Image (cartoon, rainbow, N blue to C red; front, side, top):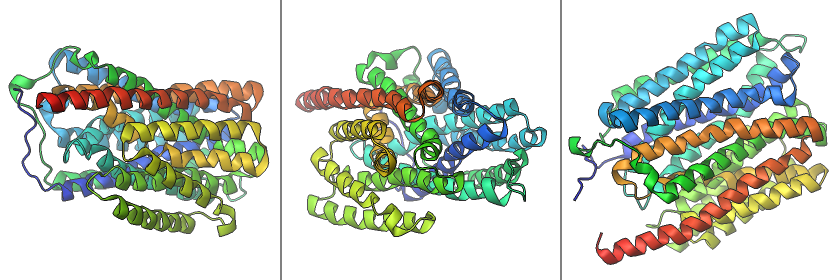
Length: 470
């Protein structure tokens, strides 16, 4: 029998809190792309297609970085298994901080390709973090609670994405903009230097904290293409491509969509963009509770109601909108709450339900106008909430010694965030922003089918393993 991962400690509270801080910070910086897109679009007079190169370079780095990692793993063995998760995480933080620092020369010379280069380096750093930190969190406890645990850390990642549009938008559109209100590239210099400094401080904290080591025995070193023998992993890679592509595409176009349909300017739209990402935060906290099978149903209901109310109040305190302007979001919270209970704490079933709701919301976005269209597109965020963690954990479920290799393949699929927005940008140039949302519709349909597949296939695997005594 293969020996499983070794741990130095079973008390994972401190390591989990420390890694959660990192999730928050990279969520914040990733969401800054949604602020950069309309900013750079106006600054350099770009088309929608050209402005989407921001996402293409940032998320394209995920593909390049993950491909390099995968090629090394099949020829030399898993790099993370050799150097350890902690060193891998610290390397990713250092690379991401370098990307932030490179915004300084890009802004100084006011040259769009330099911005794209800085975003590519930043994306490479986050690639390493995605491969190491997500897999690390999934190992900090039992496999049964992996989805719940990853949802909790992803909730704090979503907290970063929630405050980024408001705080980041204030820094770039207001605080560091020109006194006369005109756009200038130098507005990004100080904010991204601040982000680099915070990342390095988080790295220093992680370097000082004792993290348990998860490394396989020498004889377990993985080489070759073994991870690809799992069909659910291959399907999961495609589902992750579609999820990240759909989520990023929708978020990238919200400011432009609100400008087109509601005539809002950037200063107003950034607050609604924060609602989109805030919905993901609410859903992930609810998901962490709902998918925790150690909690009884009555207690789940109480905890979920309390968490939803608390997080809603946090979002209300962050965005510069009245209660009347965001009260529509309560309807989506109730619908989200109901969807979790219909999903019955099953990650695959819940994933399908959420994907189906997002398909309906996207169609509503395309066919309606005014506030109804706006509410529909903003509601997508709360149903995106559990998709990353559920797709990720379902895809790498049961991979054993191939877990890190499989993780690199799933992270490679974040390439969807580079490709899908480009296609939607092309359609937006040709037919308008509203009609371009047909692209994410197909993305969520794939996710719906993946959830249904895992409900049947992984359930069958678990039953077979249980009967065989494994």
